Image 1 (cartoon, rainbow over the protein chains, first blue to last red):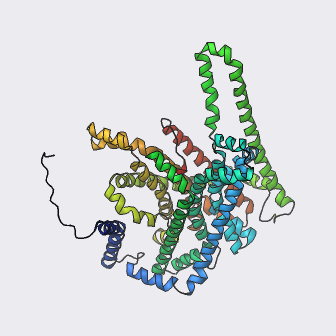
Image 2 (tube, each protein chain N blue to C red):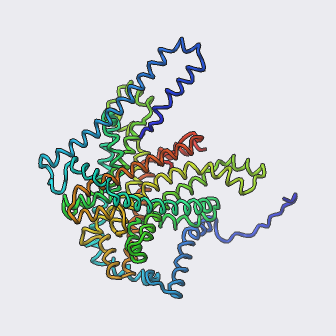
Image 3 (cartoon, rainbow over the protein chains, first blue to last red):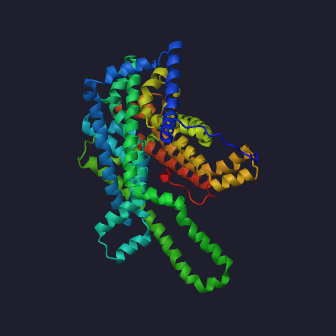
Length: 274
Length: 298
């Protein structure tokens, strides 16, 4: 550090806002663009058997998924995924609230719930197929049974750990039990519930793919395996990319919903931190 | 879920208190003994209810096919399944398959842990890297690892490596994200203090960053261990490398349903065991830490 510092003021051409936006976009897109460029150069210099070049991949993506395949394979898969997620979240929250508020029930069910959560969901698929046949309902049931547990257990835990002072205050002010549920128990449990939903989403997506791998004749998962078995490498990669996009979309929707639902919670956290 | 340790600790604390302070013992003994007895009764009640729950489940399972509510051909009774499970445990091949599954799980988890801790620490400590990699991470993380099954099959066939790709990809992100958050969570005052006392970069990492990130790492490790088991068994089912998952598929195509159910129970028990072991490790390594963080730190 020197005692005298002088700053040279250079005239700013662009406004601050624009340079800020430019910087952010550079950070956001820099690495992905760099990686794609390296990948493109690599693919032209040393073509690998199982790795198509970016241009091939984009062509395959457009040829494969934009068109009728979108309606016969992609939409039904996404529909099953959506129904499965909504059902497992609903069942998880309702059952979790019941079990969490009822100590007797909780202690009765706890060991079994711990066990069911620990069962890797894909092993249920062979059983579901033989009991229900390779139907849409079977696939949805597999998604629901697999992704139910994180929501259920986190709801139980969240409901159970409601602040006892608040519960007693609500009781003494004669707040009805429905109102208590609506304004105290569920909001208090919501951070944990959302943490459970986040885990459920990734399991649901895995199960959507798996439920179509062995026992199906359409859907995203089936198509990817079909391409692999027929050595349609670029098409197979385009399917993987599509699944990645679905995952990103799901994560983005979740972030939006979480921000909306837990706005108060993040606010409190920020105040605590400051 | 309430940890068993919690119910065990307060009586122990009361005991030391009783020994250490004889004056209060005479005055408070009945008052202290009463809640203690109540707690014991509560623990006993909890265990009894838990066992009742398990028995209730087994009875329901037994009755469903026996009463013809589900097809007994595809849904064997609890007794049939448990007998089959007993027979399996006397078969050496069964234990070999357990070993194969756990080997894939262990190697996968180890690779993922090492990669994720190193990359997570480096990227988390350098703000430039953190900003530059953000979008790439957010894009790669949600890709379901099972989408990579076809690629893994093409590259390695029915070998262990194919399963490892899937396992490592899935469990890497769980740990990586936690380490990334953990490393960034270093207390600003503590960091500045360490700097002003002239701690070298190396000792700052060891004495400051590591303890801060450890709870996050342990949470990530526990989540990753569960995910790695799911993917290890999925890989065996759909790639076909030897292990419990492949045995389930074999038993299913042979129509040997009691074995299918018995193996499903075994996978559940393995999952339970892994959960318990990792919770115990977490408690052990973080006994110095005030709060053992839950999954909702994210």
